[in-house]
Length: 350
Image (cartoon, rainbow, N blue to C red; front, side):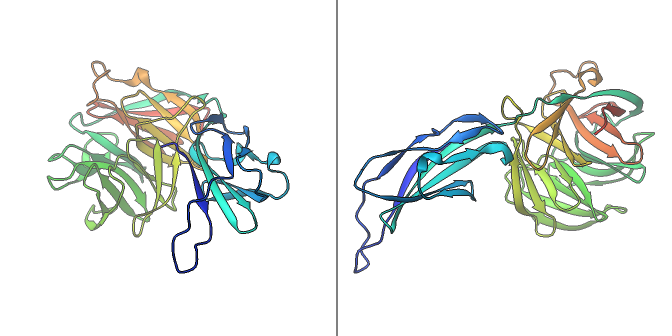
């Protein structure tokens, strides 16, 4: 939500009574709420005086919670350089101090687009493998020669270790009927799995798939899950990615994902490797490559040619599933109810 508002602070009267409302002494002229800029743009902060009888002492500028600068003499010199900003929606806060002890605050919500034109990343198919066409694939990762796969649909959800060559499960555990399985990630020999709308996740032993514990989380929907080996990274079907510490499953950070044209919504299954986040976009036949530090889309992998015949346009059979093999540098990709798993090599590699 974009916003623009003003707030004024002044000392209360003696006796604990609330201070009387005081007229604003300045007006934020620019940037206006809803302003769209590109990362790297310099944004002038313009204030107009509403009352000439007040002396402005200083003006502070904040981007989100971060203090950017303070100007003491001439507010006309106040600029915000967005070069180091994350992309997405941000709030600029301008705090004006005047008459020694008084202050007022102006805020404006702006949108920062990426300054990068995403690279088109090509690929070649190395090999095709069978895949369980009954599997509603929600999560995928590679470990020690096998694939780990999470499948969805209430009453049919599972976590499985899959033999790549045959496509058949080596081990499989089913979720209780009230849960809809979603993304999975591996950390410290434990498999983390989130669920769709239950706000409940599970932790399993990597080898036996025995459930170790469950956990609750506040994010309303669980979609994709991956890890940067420090935090779990979770999607919820929006343009946001959440960074979550794995012990108590509390959120420690969040980014929004934008390219140079706008927001990338419906982020789904995730994979992290070599400092990049790869994400399926629900209902689309491409994968986006994301910079986890800024939220910028740096690349795009169009896999339209891999969609099985008869699956195009069917949201129950969309591209969904990315796993990285560090030994070969290749990716494994598949989709919901796809009968095939592809091993692909990217060019250029990431």
